[in-house]
Amino acid sequence: MSKGPQRIRGTQDIWGEEADRFQAVVATFDRVRRLYAFGRVEVPVFEATEVFARSIGETTDIVSKEMYTFPDRGGDSLTLRPEFTAGLCRAYLSEGWQQHVPLKLATHGPVFRYERPQKGRFRQFHQLDAEIIGSDSALADVELLVLADQLLRELGIGEGVRLELNTLGDAETRDAWRAALVRHFESHRADLSEDSLSRLDRNPLRILDSKDPKDRPIADAAPGIDEYLSPAAADFFAQVTAGLDAAGVAWTRNSRLVRGLDYYRHTAFEFVTDRLGAQGTVLAGGRYDGLIESLGGPATPAVGWAAGIERLAMLIDVPGRARPDAVLVPLGERAESAAVGLLAELRRAGVACDMAFKGNMKKRMAKADASGARFAVILGDDELDRGEAAVKVLGTGDQEHVKLAGLAGTLRGR
RNA sequence: GCGAUCGUAGCUCAGCUGGUUAGAGCAUCGGUUUGUGGUACCGAGGGUCGCGGGUUCAAGUCCCGUCGGUCGCCCCA
Image (cartoon, rainbow, N blue to C red; front, side):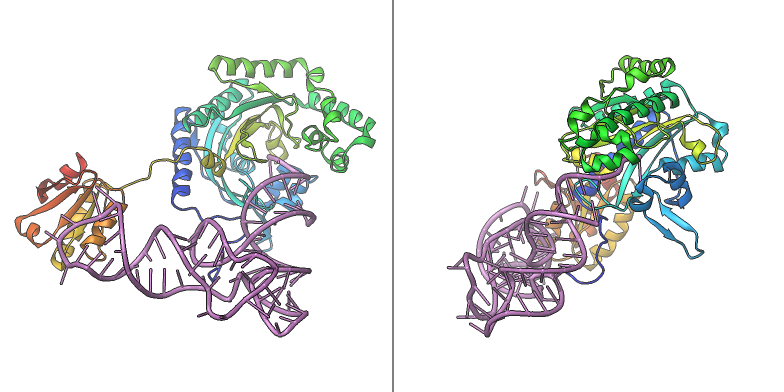
């Protein structure tokens, strides 16, 4: 192990193939979100702690244990964003974006959670994010889901991933169902796992997706939400599923899929794979009509999703490596200084190229080959005197002399 | 926060039940060839064996602690 500063726990230095994968995911997202007319937005990496604490609700231990929170020099409590949604809603309120409603927003970047790293979970990781703020239409939910579906398809992982869909209903539905769940679990108190007993007080909905075999029979026998759905909520969910069917997006109902936080309403969804161990969720979101109000704004309907870039990057096929069109191989001092000018010229003409400037010719040719370039452009005194370069096609070994004036055209035009 | 498991060169690993100067492959650099790559051959550099303590005549090897990786639990906005 080398000395000096080390990478801090749960962070990553991304390079080489990993970086190519990462970039491929971001590029695909950026392309697809334009097809759906989602505008790119930039928001701060940190916010006043209040922004996240108020949106999440003080009750959970997310706020106390899972956030990167620290005082700044002025004594204010700041938090590195653990997600995009709360910050976007803060911006929506503080920048007066209400006038642009409904707002279709897309962003991506680093997010931070103070947790134990494991497969596909880091302390600094990266998310794609898409939101529609200010629409109470089921069409907004549908649009977001179709966008997500197309994104996964274009990444080439649509096959191994399934969309699980549920509704949490409106506020009255949710309250009624929650009360019924608590009654059910209370009556089986003696048989619940220790974890679920504490969930019963803090977050009873979470018992539904407990992994403890002790809990499974009780959770599976719990009342479903459908019996408590108000007519309006049932109608809303029907519109969402009808929209998905119309758009040709496959989905499966998972009536056990829940959200712990109170601001969630109606649609909740996850795109899930079984290729990532315990962290199988690849993209998740839902409707959060209560969030902006809890930040102190007016009641504002909104829906959105986020996806982990690293998880997506692990699932896609290896993207092709970016390779230059040509590598210059100058021989001798005179050729080297001439090559500097030629290199600049070629790049300005739109030819991606690099120069091998170390070692003897053999080393330089090896560098050119290792770069994956199509051409090696050999420049020695003989060529210079004739105003030419020797262009070697690395794939075939063919070599011919080309006038410097026409070089860019030759290299670009293959 | 909890549990399991691992930590030897830049990377992947070997090093048997504790026993001399810690090895290999790949990669890097140099050379065989100061004007021709993807092949071959020769050579070189690079390791406080994660860190600290303990047991022992002797520790990479055993014990304790600690830090870090991995996988899982909790949590999952």
